[in-house]
Length: 110
Image (cartoon, rainbow, N blue to C red; front, side):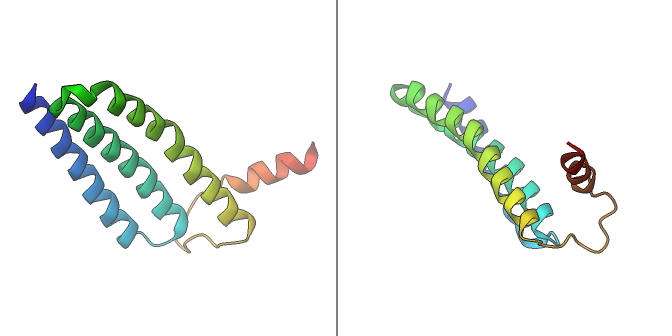
């Protein structure tokens, strides 16, 4: 169980590192949110579960925390992205698809 915990924690660290690179290198706020959401969610999840396997006494507590991270991180990043769109943060000039325009048209019709 110890080896499996170390492996999961290592996978989590790799995800967190790649997410931080994405946040630093991606061109606009929407791409950065995507990198931050996916990588930090999976990185935190694997790290927390790995720590739970390393310390069996904490396993159930860390599982609850990991579930909470899986639930709240995407929701909070969605709120950040939506707020960015509402205040008019522009897309990167090389972005090809903007699905939010279709959603705005749908909201105006209804």
